Length: 639
Image 1 (spheres, rainbow, N blue to C red):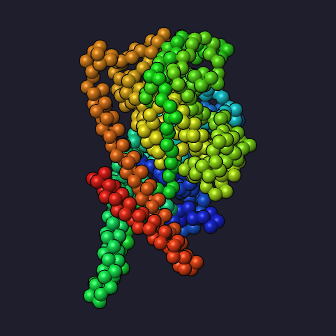
Image 2: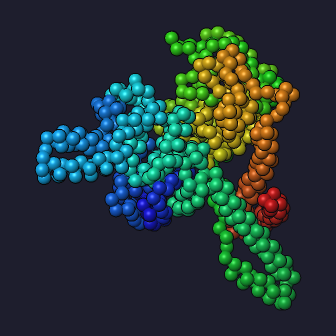
């Protein structure tokens, strides 16, 4: 056992963030810490490092164990160069090497006991030096820096001149080179491109020490972790396996809880209906039987309803009209900025119903291409043709589509002036903005909150062609999954740039790989793209989109067949899951409505209003009948 957190609790003011957090991290173990935004993940990391003090509980770190912590916010203003900062991380080994060199000089001139003493010290130190991999410290520094995206030309750059993202990469490099027994990483992939993330996955997977990671990058977690610690409603729960394993187990757990709850509610309602019927006979025997059933009902240990409906963002993407089959055609598109040529003679086409992901290294012009398509930038040459009845909805990762001086309410109202106040409030509530929060200024919002406002505007646009630039940035895992479901249910066309490989895997039907040499087409999701790229099945063509062989042209690859079958099955499962979600939402609505009816019926002024009382009673009974039907349908779909 390297780290133990035992019953950790923490509150800020009257707001309790952590209530009862307990888990273990063993030596060499790689674990993820997950939960919705605001669940207290970063707070817990700061309690482990000692930056925050817990209100209750205990953090136990193995005696003598070293700890490295990468925070989300890095404030480094050092005048040292990047390479000098790395030398500091290896100072102990460098000092050892200098001592060894000095001992070598001493041994050449010493005699007698002094020589023996120097030889013994030399032997011990060289053994320790070799054990610490001392002979490779220079290549380790170069390897880590290059792995995290720095070129050798960057090594002499003073740290204070770097951007926030670059400083984070420097801090991460230093931690990896220090090789502590336990590394705590808070969103380590936020400022890395795909190549650097892939390198970090390999590094951490083979790292001999332990790692605890907070990350929204589910693909990254799948590759690295073997344990998931979930924080939900202030409590913790541990699941063995990677993220996908956790997601399956969590879904099964919630489904079982919901089924147990709904079954019990159905039984309770049945018993209450029987009791009411028995009492309506108004006979001594039937009343005694009703009382007996009531006592049995009171003894039932009630199952709590799983909290899964009210805390989630709700998004539904529906085009107002369908576009023509040809949505977008680009011919010989060219764009440069000064001496930097992003792309030349670029050709591509997108058809209705496709979900196309655009990949490429940083600086290849992905965001620029989206802005050109969305008419926010002019190309240097080439033509863009939009299909019949195409209407574009644009999501900008930099949130330039938002007016920071507006309140959240005004941002929606200005964009859609025909919407009523009630409709605006309902839409914002679906994106978790309720009460007076709707009057908060956009400029004061976090990145995730701005993202939700942009998604609300996107949903209201009813566009049939969505252009999305990093739509999952700043969204927690739960919100990302909701957006994935919305895109998979969407009847329009989607073209996006994303570094979220899990998101790409779940949504893309086609991938375009953009590079200075051109653009290459892969008809499949991210896993299929990796398989084909690694197998070298497609060669880049600088003049046009290069496609894999179509079914009519060549034998279909077995992996493609498997992928298509799995996607069809996944689509069928998603359809069932979405119907179940809709049922659960309707059940929750009717239950809430009946609670309100019961409250109103208990008011003294209503008790004397026979007409209103009858009206409420009829509504209540109608809802109860509908609930019984919904419960049955829910059970059928769940099975």
